[in-house]
Amino acid sequence: MDDKPRQLALMRFAVIRELLVDPPGHGGLASAIRDLASRTWKLPDGRLVTFHFSTIESWVYIARNATDPVAALMSDARSDRGSSKIIHGILLDTLESQYRNHPSWTAKLHHKNLAAEIRRAEHLGAVIPSYATVRRTLRRQGWSRQPKPRTEGQKRAIERRARREVRQFEMPYAHALWHFDFHEGSRRVVLADGTYVKPQLVAFIDDHSRVVCHVQWYLEEDTQRLVHGLRQAILKRGLPRAVLHDNGGAMTSAEFRQGLEDLGIEDNGTLSYSPYQNGKSEAFWDTVESQLIPLLENIDPLDLSTLNRATQAWVEGEYHRERHDEIKMSPLERLTKAKSVERSPP
Image (cartoon, rainbow, N blue to C red):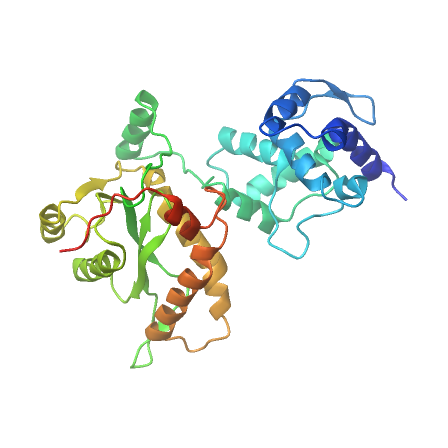
C-alpha cells in the first residue's frame, strides 16, 4: 500500500494540531491561522514549504469534527464525495494563480496544466480533480475566460479598468440596487405549432440580499417583456432606489428609461465591454443552468408555462432558502436581517 497519502495527512495534522487540542477563543482563529501560515514546514520528502491561510483554514474545518482527523485529511479521502465537488485550499490557490496569469485559457487547458502541476508538486496532494470539477470551480469563483482583446472598444475597457479600480461591490441596504438582465436558456421549449425555441429568462436580483425579486421566462427579449417583468418585481418587493443592467437594447429604449425616471429609480448601465460589473446576474444564470435545468431533463416536451411554474417553485423553495456562498446565509435570511430602503409601489 502506498503510504504517501497518510504521511501527507500526518503532516497536515501536525500543522493544525494545536488548534484542535486548544481551540482559540472567539475571534482568535484567524490570527492563529495567520501565525501558522507564516511558519515554514517540512514535507515528508524533506522539502521546506509554507502554506496559505486558506489551505490551513480548510484543514481545520475538515478535521475538527472528524472522528479520525488524520483519515479525514488524507488526500484521497474526499469530503465532498456524493455531492457537487469543488476545489479548495492550496489547490484553489494554485488554480487562481494559473487563471490570473492565463485568463484567456479554456477550462480544458486549465485542467491539463493543473494536473501537470499536481504531478510535479507533491504537497498539492495526490488526487487530480476531474475536468468537470475544475470547470465548476472556475465558474463558481467567477473566473470566466477572457479572450485576448482584439477590438478598440475592448482595449479601451481594459485601459479604463487599469486607470481606476472597478471592484466587486455590495450595497449596504436591501433594495438599494437591483441587477437585471436577460439570459438565453439552454433548454428549448415547445410552441403550440410544435416548433422549438430557446426562451429568454429575465431576473431582478437585489444586490444586498441576492433575493430574486421576480424571475420569468419569455419567448422574446424586448422592452414589452422587460416592463412586464419589472412590474411584477415591483409589485412583489416594492420600488428599488437604483438598477444596474448591461445596456441591452430593451434596457436602453427611451420608453423604458422614461418609466424609470417617472418612478424615481436611478438608471445605471455597466461599462462597455465590462460585463464583470453585473456579476451577480451571471452567477445566478450559472445556478439556474447547473441546478434548475437538470431537474427538468425528464420533462419532454417542455412548454413555457411548465418551465415558468417550475422556475418559480425552485426560486422560492430552494434558491431563496439555501446558504449562499458569498453572503454565508440564505438570501431570505439576509433580507430579513437587512435594513431596507425600498419604497411602496404607486
